[in-house]
Image (cartoon, rainbow, N blue to C red; front, side, top):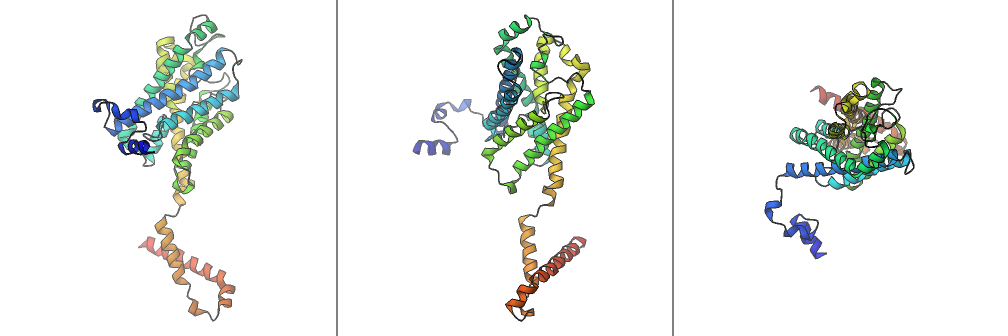
Length: 329
């Protein structure tokens, strides 16, 4: 206990960290947050793409649709938990932009976070690709293609269903990311009383739910960095086909989530947060209503009980008139 307390006072979780020279330590807060965002994005893509390749390369023998979505949900959980105490483990440009619009991040943080998130996705995809290189060679004979029976591009990035138009996929991405950011906003609302340590769990469950309900059209990327970072790496492997595949579909999983994030977060603001009483407003309201209840106007406690509802209604009307006059002034 004494060792843990001393480590906490010095800012470390583990005693061994105390023995590294100061020159190795990053003191700048933004730089530390970026380092954490990179690691979170890396782990998110490493787990998610790893499970996708494992299931698709063996044609479902090692898993199915449910296990695929469970692993992506757990990828969100573990990657967010990794950075919850430093940067929040966002990994997602949509989330970062929404947090900026809600006043939770600075513009400087967002500008730096997003390229780091994309780079983390790039490295995570590259690591998963190298890990499964021999499996991919066994699947397609060592010839990488983006179309045909042995195509492997969709192991790593989202691809639209053969019957789905770009417009349908764009709308799908807006809906899916709106669900993600609406629930995220509710988690961040202190009135809902959700501890910070539970945010990764709720985030993972949200992604799992979206995957089980909105994955048919284009595999629910709901994450611009997840798809863009992976495509940037795959450009090295497949060439320009990663951009032309699906008649230049690549922009849909980038633009759709960026729009959907704002839609979901501001739906929560418009329907919930905008109409909430602040502590100060509620205190003033109760004080005003109490001042309108004058027991001397009644002859007995019994009479007060009988006409209590009338007093409340009268007081509420007086409060509404009071606040209306104040707003006009």
